[in-house]
Length: 304
Image (tube, rainbow, N blue to C red; front, side, top):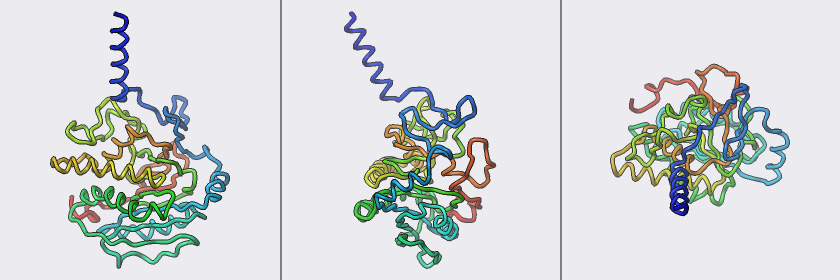
C-alpha cells in the first residue's frame, strides 16, 4: 500500500513538473525594491546590479564579435537612421559589432558612420503585404543566417526591432548563454492577463496557470548556437501552426514565450532594455537604455 501511495505521489510530482505549475515570480518585491534574480537563479539585469567597467573589461579580453540582426521592410526603413546612430553611441561601444540588416529597400539604407571594428551588411529580402508575415518570417531568416554565416563570424547574436532607439549604455552585462527581456507593458501584471497564446491547438499555447514573465520579442540574444536553437524551434512550431491555418496571438513573440517557459533564459534583462517611449518613467526603471519609438502603425504597416 505504501509503495502504491509512493508511486502515486511520484506520478503527481512528475505531472506537476511537466506542467510547470508554481507561483509566479515577481519583478518588484513587497518592499518596492527590484528583484535581481529569478527563481532558477538567472540574473535580472537592472541599473546598480553590475560594474560596467569591470564586466566590459572581462569580455573585451575575449575578443568577441557580437552579431546584431535588424529587419527593416517597407516603410520601416525610416527608423534605420536613429537606430544605427543611437546604437553607435550606446550599444556595445568598444566591441566588435556586425550589423546584419534585412530589407526590401537596400537603396534606402542611410549612410551612418560606424566606429572602429564595426560593420554593416545589407541582405535583400522579398517584400510582404502583411506585417504579421514579416514577423513570422524573422525566425526563419535568423535561423538560416546563423547556419550560413554567424556560426563562423560571431560569438553572440542579438536580434533587435528596428523601430527603436538607444538612450543609454547597453554593454557586456547583457551577454549570456540565452537572453530574454521582460516586456515593459506586463512586468507588474499577473500571468493570467499575459497575452500568451491560449488556444490549445497552437504550438505556442501556454495554460492560464503557467508562465514566469512576459518576454518581449523585440530583443532576443545569446550565444550563436543557443539563439539558433530558439530560432529553429520557433520556426518549426510556426510551420506546424501554419499547416493548420493557425496564427499565434503575437506571432513569433508568442512562440518565443512558449520556448522560454520550458527553456529558461540564463540571464533576463529588465525593462530598462526594452521600454516604450509613450510610457512614463516608473520608480523601478531608473534608466531607459533601449525603447520602442512612438509611431503611427497605420502609416508604416502594409496592412491593419
